[in-house]
Length: 513
Image (cartoon, rainbow, N blue to C red; front, side, top):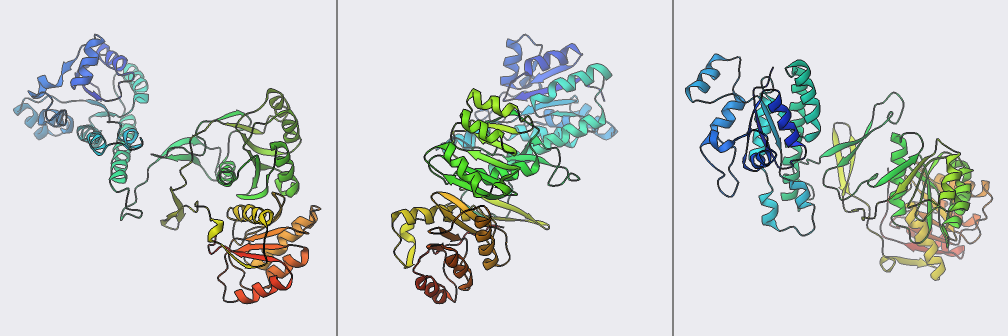
C-alpha cells in the first residue's frame, strides 16, 4: 500500500520533524494535533492542524483532541469494502494511511517518588492508545508507528518501493499493540498497587539483550527487564571485555549480586551454577577474594565473581591467574585491567549502578502452564527475634552465625553452610537429605584443608533428626543456627548441648529451589 495522508500526534517529539519533512518530500499530506502541529510549523514543515479537519480545538484541558469520527473513520475504513468508502464520501471524510503516535509518559511519571495522584491521572493517555489500536487493527490499509526508532526504516522502505509492505505493516501493528498493552498494564498495576496478588497479574518486560543461547546451546534466549523497576541486573553495567554474556552467566550474576546486597564491608562472592561456592568478608577486598577462593577453589573454577570494592593491581593479577567466567566490580585500576586483558575471554563488568535494588519486588517462577508469584525472601532476620536454645554464644560467635545464616539463604535447599572468620569453609547445596548436605559441607571443607575446629554451621531449614548436627559437631563445629520447629527439636537440642556447643533457633526458614 502507498501513503497519501498521515496523522502525527506525539508526546515525545524526538526526530518527528525530520520524519514529517521526509513524508512531505515523498508527496504525503501531513495532519497533526495541536502540539505536534506547532512544532512542525516552527520547523517549517507543511502541516494541516487537526482542528481544521474536525472543526474542534482541544477540549477539556487537552483530554479530547483526536476522538472524532473524521479521524477514526479515516483510519478504520476498509479500502477494499465499497460500503466503507461510500460512508466516508457521504460524510466528507478522507482516508488516513499512516498514524504516528507515542503516548504520555505515564510510567515515568509514576516512577517518581510521592507523585501526586492528580498528576498521575492526567498522564493516562486516552486518545493516543485509541489511535494506535485503530491503526494497528486496520494495518491491512494503515501504517501504525509507535516509536521513533521506526521512522528511518519506514522512510527508507517507502522511498525505495513507493509503498509499505504487508509484512512491515504487520510488524508495526504488533509493536503498536505491544505498546498499548504495556501501557494499560502499567496503569492497571499502578491503580492496583495495593493489591499484592490481583485477580489478573500483568507485569510487562522489555527485551534488553539478545543472548547467544539459553541454558543449553539448543535453546534460544534473551534477557528482559521489568517495566517500572527502579533498576535491574545490568542497569549501568558496562562490559569492558570478554565474550557476550550468556543465559547461565546472568543467572549466576543475579545470584551473586543478591547475596552481595546482604553483606557489609569488603566482600567477595563466587557463584557456580546459581550457588555460592565461596563467600568472604574481610578488612580488605584482596583478603576477601583470597578467602572466598580458598573456600572451594575447585568449584570456583569457571565461576562468576562479584566484588564490592575497586580492583587494584595485586587483585587484578590474582583474578587473571584464575579461570573466571564473569567478573563484576565497581571499578578497576589501570594496572588491574592490564592484567585482565591477558584473559580476553573473561567478561569484565563495571558496576556503575548506585541506586538501591528494590527488594520488595515480587519473585516470579514459571511452572507448567502458569506462574508462581511470591514475596521476595529479602527481609533480614533480626537477632533479637532469635532464640538461643543452648549454650551461650559470645559476640564473635553471633557474628559468625549470622554470616553463615545469610549465605545459607542463598544456597539451594537442602542447604548447609559451615563458616569461620567471615569465610565459608564448606557448602552443601541442593541435597534431598539434610544430613547428606551436612556430610558434603564437612567433606568439602576437609578436602580443601580447612580445619572445622571452632567453626559454625547454618541450615536453611530445621533438622528433623539429630544426625546432621552430630556429623558437624564431631567434625569440630561449635555453634549451629537453624530455624527450629521440628517434632524432634528436643532430641536435636540435647545432642548439641551434650557436645558443649551452642544452638540458635531463628524461627524462620529460607528454602530456595
